[in-house]
Image 1 (cartoon, each protein chain N blue to C red):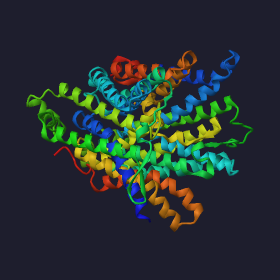
Image 2: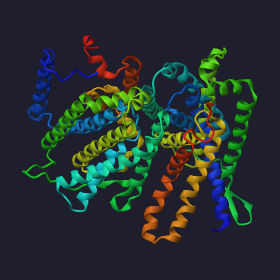
Image 3: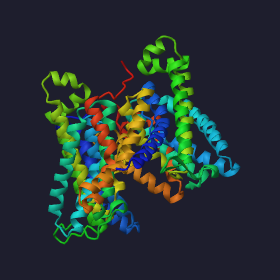
Image 4: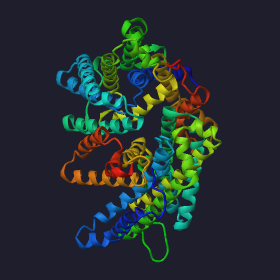
Length: 321
Length: 305
């Protein structure tokens, strides 16, 4: 599923492509501004935020085989932690990161510890239930906006004169986080632990018989993915200047799942691809029709029926199989 | 706690639970027999409510509205099942989630195109007032009618599933689909009919609940999750489980919203009570579901032996 990280000749074209992609992404904001599409830099930033969240879900869902239907809860939790800290006058980005990771990882640890005792459909439903619990909790915290949401008037202070209100600055920060996430995922999947995770996904009884700590490993991955989703949420709070319970609603978890399935389950770029396609599709359609949801739905349906392995499956070069 | 209040809330819980049962009955069969996660089930509830509201608005007759909604939504459900959903039965849960999530988008926006974002629907004028059930307990007569309708439909469904040949085939399918097919049951055709009945029940719930909640796009999304909670508690594929689960969820939710908040006010300082009360109430059914799963991971009445 993943090419070995070797120095084989076939690695070279891939690296060239990766370098070209990186260059293009770095050059994107100034190019957009020069072309008069400066407004879309913030759209690009939003795509990056969802790409991070979807990639973290792909780790759980694709490589771990855990169909979590409450992933948006961790995203929303991260957004709320950062939003609440800013509202209370704590602006240091390092503090935001530390507390966001601690809270979202802590929540994922507790939710995962309970949910992972169930299997299959019941796991889907129990993660859904936990997500909804956090959604309703967010609705009821009156001190921080309650069901109306919370306006975040300031931004995380990164230092070095960087201002996250500036769309290109935000874009580069989010791009760095996404690159780090993808690199981490790539390394993890190729590692012994990553292979063990996939072995557990494919046959957990055999993996357990072979002596793998199936429960602990799944829980660790679930927790790590929760933390990454939390960081994406913290970025989202900074970009939107607004957090609301809707971030945690089950339809949001569904949207993240759609991104992963659309892009390609258990592929490195699946989450990114899904986020790009879904958000670009939405933005493009909404420019032409107010009924963009209707047409998005048909596109998604066509993908399920005709591209069984997601878009990444379509792009995959046949000789790699 | 005054007993009149408790009785009133018990009736509310019964009413809500019965309506949840109408939704959960179809959902649990789709889930149990076809092993299909149908997120678009809530959309049938919404479509039923819109059809009902439109017919009531045009004719002025509530009975006609319910009947039209049932027929229209039932037929729509059968067409939906035999065209778009059937190819999904053989696919994995992820594909089903993606496809039915897409269906939610399509049906939500489609409804908006045809009917607009919401439609007015109020209870029939004859049922607008309250009746005095026991001295001191005035209860809205419309809610009593809902309870009556829910009880009748639940009884009919029980007879259908437990006493008829079709019901036996459905139960056989839920217990072991492959075996039922091997014994010569045409599960597919049977299932189109079952899906149509499930859609019709959604329409009843949607139209009856319309005057109490609101007929608007997106109304299916929240109630869908409650229906899933119901069938997970009851045991996937079991009609009896759906009924018990629905009533339990109805009671837990209703009492969570009223009695538990009252208790909070008595035992905690006002600031904490007013902040934590609503949160506890909304979360109560999910805690309940997690507790049931912890004790009986297959739900209360597992359909598969």
